[in-house]
Image (tube, rainbow, N blue to C red; front, top):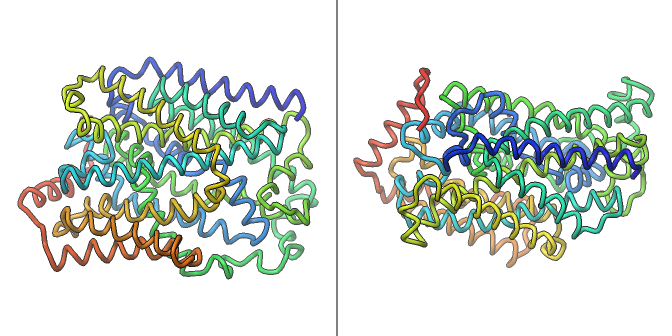
Length: 497
């Protein structure tokens, strides 16, 4: 990299730290830290929801799939999310908002203790937090691969630098820092994406390259489905992403909770949905074109980095690299904030009696300590990511397959249609899904579609089936779900809880 590229990257890191420090002044209580006090504007919540949903894995693992198999990665990787978030705008966004406004919930899992019981809440908390350590570790590893590809920076140093900067602004400003840095990163990443697509189109002969390029690519690169990523895989991914991106990934539920009212929560969700359907096409067009510019790569995951170095002048490489960092740091920062909320408000009071008596200042301090601990642990695991199967294995197989069993009780438990499903259904569906994944992944070495699809389908069948044959419906659950349903349909603003 040229000195100008380093100026861009260092300037980006400095801006993120500055935003985090400025946000520090807005955080007075743990609810400010975890859910922005319920005062986040809809457009900021929507952009933050979008930016928190994907990382540098896009430019490494997904770029590798685009290089070798074409546009299929857009359909199951991003269009599925756009569809899922649009469904969530109607079904889940306002309910999450009302859990905060009507029930005083400040953590995505506080609801589970009241809806089911504490053992159910703790099972989801521990399994979800453990999974997120590995998920976030894969993000650090992916971005460090990019830094190594561009500048020869050792992977360990890349993990320490990106993790350290994220740690600083996460601990300082909480969700406000996450959202405001997400917006700054959205602007930077937008400029980087435009620069890259402009460079590719210029090399292809102008705007006509948008439609003339495809005939020159290998056969099958224009197909939405392939032998590896089938129609069934795509449909299951829509189901998985509907659950994952509407609260199954706890950090994204916080964006709905942080909005001031139902209307704002839904508008934010619809903005995020639109961005997922449109913006990845801009980012991924250079990835689809990569076989024309850097043919014959032994490692397809390096294709985007190779194209950037080949096509862009000094300074612009640094801008694109900063854009790649922006996705990872946005996603990891929001994950860290959500996990710290779960640890502080859901796990710690069960483990330590004294924590139940914490005031707002003590919970805020505990939240910052939890943020530090989570990020530090994920950075440690990132140093071992390659031995865990690599980035795509962690993100697609582990997270997609395991997030479903964790998400099913959490999301469906909010809906009045499943009021007969209680703690027994929740725990059995969770355990059944995880056990199914273990058998498929480690026992019979099933293909990708079966590994991702079967655990969530088993969880769904067990959760719904046990509710039907062994109802655990109670008047307390009925009252809670009826009130949540009524309040989520209101259009008038509600006071932040």
